[in-house]
Image (cartoon, rainbow, N blue to C red; front, side, top):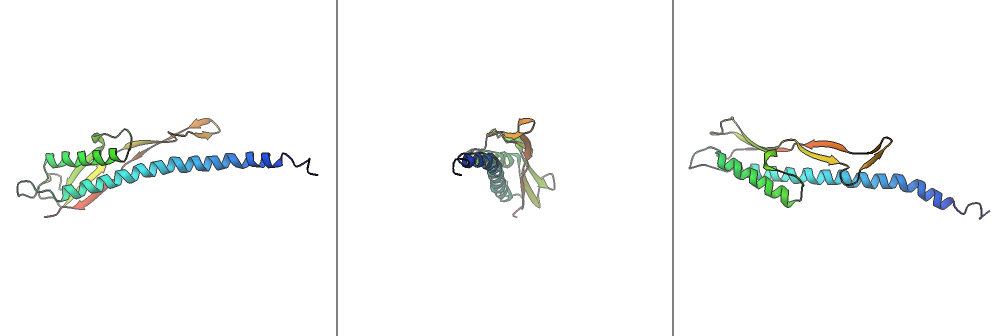
Length: 146
């Protein structure tokens, strides 16, 4: 009886190993994407907080230098979190009203940052190895402090 079941454990392990590896690969890839998204959200929040407190020459306004400083803050925070291929072109700083003179709200957004899920470890489909291309677009809006 023992001779007939000798290779059963190896076959069962091989059958369980494939789905287990797919789950682990999925966790790694989606975890990496969530890590990037979290870093982007935190950077927009910090920059929005900065812009919401800026006062230019004792007037209630947000100037281009403040917007550039906010973009640089986002870039520095995202780079420190090791998010790859990020540029300040993805960052948009806007106000409500749009002229940024006596604004009510300021918004710091990251627009269409591309992430490839399956970039580190490609997923295996019936058609072969593949990836998903998604875009992350987090933003933070804060009331302008007067």
